[in-house]
Image (cartoon, rainbow, N blue to C red; front, side, top):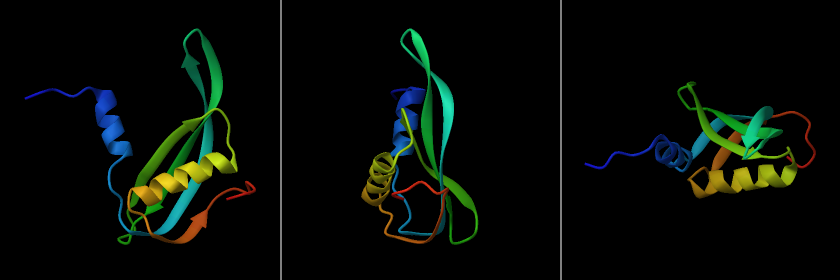
Length: 99
């Protein structure tokens, strides 16, 4: 039996299939200091928290981009659709233009 690294487990989690419908999605980007080679930058980590039919909550996406922007959110939404999400009733987010 071959052992997986934590990185492989994370990538599998990030690409796992989703439910077809989530009643509510919460969207936000949080900035964290991130080490890149020999420097540290303040980068945006996009988080999508879903409320499921049974009212439990699940983080369904976590992405990293240097800044927050509507084009980066579009990439996140396309990934959610690719993973099986088809319907959302309510999206809760800040006032970022383009969402």
